[in-house]
Image (cartoon, rainbow, N blue to C red; front, top):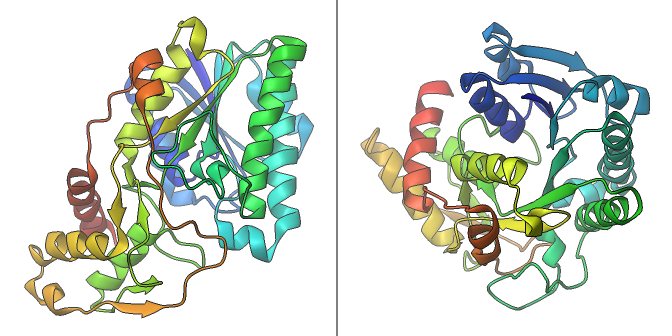
Amino acid sequence: MKILITGVAGFIGSNLAEYFLEKGEEVVGLDNFATGHFHNIGPLQKMDGFSFIEGDIRNLDTCHQAVKGCDYVLHQAALGSVPRSIKDPITSNEVNVGGFLNMLVACKDAGVKKMVYAASSSTYGDSAALPKVEDVIGKPLSPYAITKYVNELYADVFYKTYGFNAVGLRYFNVFGRKQDPNGAYAAVIPLFTKNLMNKQSPNINGDGTYSRDFTYIDNVIQANEKAMLSKHPDAKNTVFNVAYGDRTDLNLLVDLLRDSLSKLDPEIAKVKTTYGPNRVGDIPHSLASIDKARTIIGYDPQFNIQQGINEAVKWYWNNL
């Protein structure tokens, strides 16, 4: 197979590329390094079957060039982060909506078999129902959430209008190796891991009772592969939750990270947690139903929060 992975220099994209290259597939990577890193593609460039295009999905010609000859596209390129979208909604929209539409057009024109794209649990918005089920969503709570919902609407229209098959994976708080702990929009697990390793107090927004369905990267890789290759008729033009199906509050998350890291440095056990105000646009609780993905594409996540943290902590310990 020849697979295009957009956002290949990012956390999820680089892990996907490494996985498929190790399986002997041909991988084309596309990235503009807006949030991705050169150090994530360095190892990929030493592997057989990898080629790289430095470019921006906001450029339609670049998208056409990237998809040429590809069987499948795994579209991971986006500007993530709710706070980033609140600070700069225009750029988030240009990349996440305009860039997504460019990729759909390029895939359709090139006869790509299927595009699997990174959707988001933020699409559930103000829906209070738990667990989150794909067909029940609320109103978006941030510009980022709007962009990811628009992706799903565009994908649906492209299937009904042009017969092009795109499948969305609503990621729930993905974490693991290669996730960037630095910068203003760092995700909570790599940020707290870096804090604890440096003997600095992790700062929780709110009182720590907000909870999330934290999802280890290897579960996400499995979901992408199964969604990409599934021949099930119900796996066309649809969205799947990609999560573990359990929730962990932020107080417990810090405890798990502290316990895992203190096995490597006992002094970390003494680091205290601090607390600040709740963050604008955050939902209190997130928990996925993964029944649809289990039933239709055979998704079977192998890493729970504890197993994932143990793996992630080892990686950060050896690489930070």
